[in-house]
Image (cartoon, helix red, strand yellow):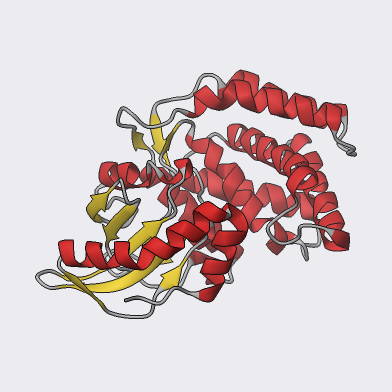
Length: 310
C-alpha cells in the first residue's frame, strides 16, 4: 500500500473539502488496482503535483514508466487526449489510460524542470520550440477555447465594475478587445494550455518534454500569456522591466514561430485576468496581507506594460 505525501493530502482537503478527503481514502486502493492491471511495481518514492500523485514504476515487460492518478476534475479530462494526439512529439508518451480513474501510465523522464535553468533567454527559447512542436491539428472532442470567449468577456466586465482596482479603462478595454477580436475566432490547433517552465522537464528520449497539458484547441499564441505569468517574478531585478517583459515575449514568439503582436495581446489579456483574479481569490503565493498587495500591484504593472505594446 502506497503512502501519500502529507503536503499533497493536506492541500487536496483544503481545496476540495469532503470530496477530496473521500478520494484520498480511496486512492491507495486505486493505485494498487492499476499497478496490477498494467503489470507494474513501484520503483521509487511517490511524488505529486498540484492535483495528482506520480509513482515511478517498473513495467514487468517493458522497462520504466510513471503512474499518474489525478483528482477527478473537469480540468484534467483531456490530458490523455492531448498526449495521445502528440504521440511523443514534444511531450511524454502515453502508454495506458483509465479515464474513469483519471489515471495514466506515462513515459518516465527526469525530475528536473526548465525552471531550474538560469539563462532566461534559453528558458523561453526552449519553451517556444516546445510550443511550436505541440501545435498540431486538434482531434475532435477537445474543448475549443473560442467557446470560452463569451464567459471571458462577461467576467472581465463584471470584475471591472465590481472590484476596487487601479487598472485604467484603457487597459481593461484592451483585454476585452483581444477577446472580441482574437478569442472568438481561433484555429482548431492543439495547444498545451498551461505552458510554463515547470511543465517542461528534462528527458532521455529528447532533451526536454512537456507534461500536464490542458488539451485545448485554440490559438497557439494563447500560451504566451501562461508562460509570461510564470516568468514574471524572475524579471523583478531587471534594470528596465518594460524592456525585459517585451524581450521575453519576443524570444518566445520567435522560437514558437508566432506573430509577436498576437502573443503580446494574449499576454496582456492573461495579465488583466490575473489582476482581477488576485483581488477576488488571492494568488497561490499569497492569499492575503501585504504580500498579496505587493503581488497585485506588480500584476497591474505588467498589464499596463503589455498594453503599451513593444
